[in-house]
Image (cartoon, rainbow, N blue to C red; front, side, top):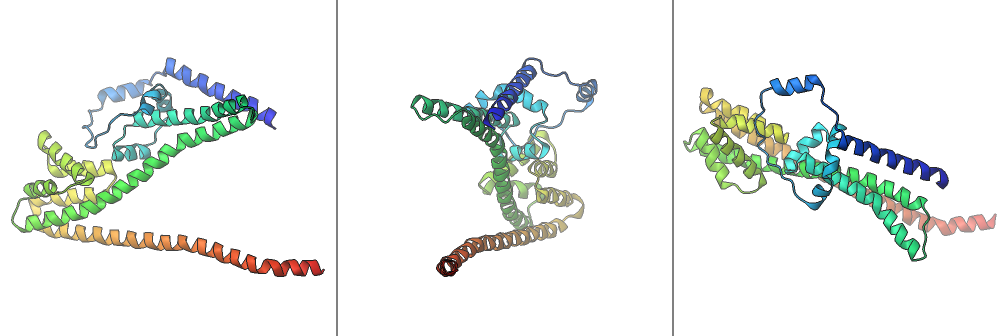
Length: 300
């Protein structure tokens, strides 16, 4: 079996390497309709969420970014998650490649070192271990990005609830909508308030309405509550004081949703805690029943 796995694994690795090298040296030309679409489509505004490129892994894996982009990576959902955590797609793809290559090479180097030391593991085990680690190194960054983005979105919803309460109080004190949005965000601290502050600064510099940039921020973050807030604020020009009632209702709805999620998480944690208790109970029953079962079997 090992003799069959080795040629297949080496052949697959050689083919993937040659394909990646060919894509890197001779990148495919885009179709004519794609070029015309880029030339005629109006330029989209700059994203509000800032991204950066840093790290040794991103620099080492940069040559593999173009082949992975040719495969359509990353997907649209993962791209939004990367924007939320402030990481560019090029950096993410480069880090995935670096981790995959490191996972592929590390077992081989370890096997060679053990062979030199007199503890040979053969050839099949390092190859299989390298393929498994390479797959894990390629997939685990995606899972980490999704988990971090989910945590940031949850924290943003909590901060947005407090922001709505403060805006409502400021509006009740007689302030205008624009001044209420700016004064409240200047008080807040943390990542969520920094993103809202960045959106309002973008609106002021580009001379656009603040609710338009807040709607864009909600779309980039994939937080529908912020887009609904922008729609409510946009009614201030026509509905006047009714915007205060709308903001108070949305803040209450956010708090109710957060309480419901907290209760659901608590119930899920309680159910997970029941599994170790059940396993312990079954082990206790087996411990009690084993001597009796041995006696019965020996008496037959």
